[in-house]
Image (tube, protein in one colour):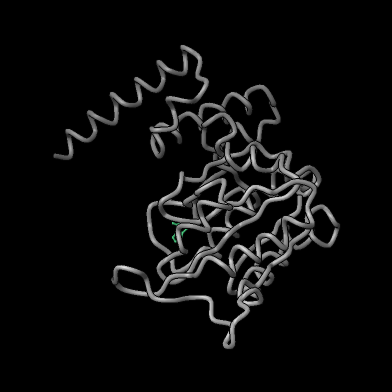
Length: 252
Ligand code: ADE
């Protein structure tokens, strides 16, 4: 996977990505990272990349030409014209399925905006995917680009070692992960659930699955619609909902 990031703050991207698991994957050559400074493609006296918006209004806008030239310089070096992800709160909200799908690409370009955004005309010409990382507004696209690259990287073969990738994950089947415990056996008066100490693998699996269903029903009920539950599990969910409703009415 080759990541290319168009940004006004390349050192922010490099510092973030060269750390921890993504850093290890870059060192191993499983990922490459190129942070391109858009300012290097502003061929005017002061390397200016922004200007006032036509029609008035607050703030400055990133101009089309430097962004376009920076992208074209990348596209010239890749086998085919790569997908361009523009980070914007106006995009489709990022999720695990998108991470999995984007991990199949050879090259991905992330375009990070600043100020009040980017001239619409260059977006029309180069952007293939408009993506948001959630319904809140950040100061720029760098953190969202790093969030996406981090989760896409995990889906690239070899990036996680066996132990890391062997874990059952949240969202695997649209269910959240079950709770986990390590030593000591008792902490702050709380004991590790008995079943986990039993060594009985079938019972442990059964308990974990039930915990996943419980957690998802409690914390992210919106995910259950897409989860693959058995009839028995649906009955369990209905029973939980009934119980929670009764408890809620009691506290009123
Ligand atoms: N740029 C600013 N806010 C953003 C968000 N929530 N997602 C993606 N890009 C952004």
